[in-house]
Image 1: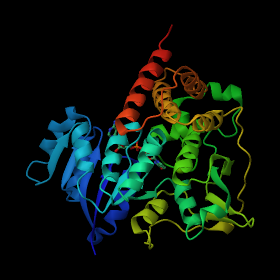
Image 2: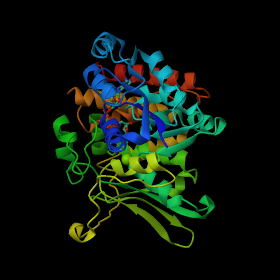
Image 3: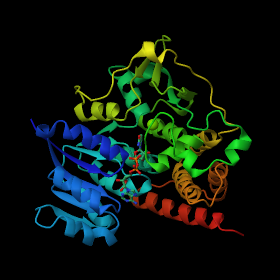
Image 4: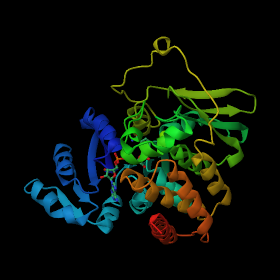
Length: 384
Ligand code: NAD
Ligand code: MG
């Protein structure tokens, strides 16, 4: 049986891992839409390889080169944010939402509104839209499957259990490349050092988020929406080996954990094949070779991001969207060499103290909060 699939953010790290699995099972999949921000050369090559119905660049200034590259292919092309959302609303059995940042929110919502299956990697969209997204999932009867490795692990550990029996959900964190750095070393951390993650090969933005631990803060909010057991039942533990991807403890003190190699093709495969299983090319775990799995409490003095994210969740309403927007701006400034590493989380906290808009009730509200928060964050970063 063939299934149809769209991949939003096809040229990224998650997009590439997804397409790698599709490539190995070509007869089972028909590709509908592939999208990218601006890389027309890579997008057109993927669209040709996978015989996509349509290829879309979000940045319209790259549409002409996308068109040129796909002349004679029979593949439709489009550009700009509206075209991206239109492509995401084309019928597909499953859509992988793998755009980075709140830029992926509108297309992800369009995919959700199809009422089919969405594999969610784009955590910033859920953090920002929160209830607005989860209400759409309920209203359209959509199956939302988490791609993020921790949430995919939790989803697997919850299978067949009554959430009322959950005592605690534990998100594991690698701790990132600066896990053991002193405060002085952190202050001097460079973008090149931050994007070099010890265990995972990922896009630049999430790599910086892993280094600041804001990734785990965003994931805490993501988990709070996906698994509504309450914030007080969500905790974070540092696990440097990235083998245990998360855990669920039940009322009887029985803990279920999901283990696997640090390769995103494992959770992506579980989403693509759900509710059954498929092969992956990943090397199976060799626990004897790994030898030790260690765990420790996070240090919120050196890495305040998880504390700040929890505060945003506790404040609720628009605050997680403000947190996310501030973080996107601060991470971009850090990557551009305009902000020191340790200022990233502090800028986010300062923005949250200055901007507390009312709770959004629609997609348009969320987009407006995101835009306003970004503008203020940019202004706060300008030299006085
Ligand atoms: P990436 O930077 O490698 O790829 C991002 C993709 O989004 C690219 O296809 C890019 O062209 C597209 N894109 C970027 N800006 C855009 C815009 N303004 N409009 C439309 N498209 C745009 O990122 P990634 O590492 O693949 O991460 C994607 C998402 O998945 C992020 O939300 C990240 O947090 C999440 N995630 C990634 C990993 C991982 O291992 N890479 C793991 C868990 C979750
Ligand atoms: Mg993760």
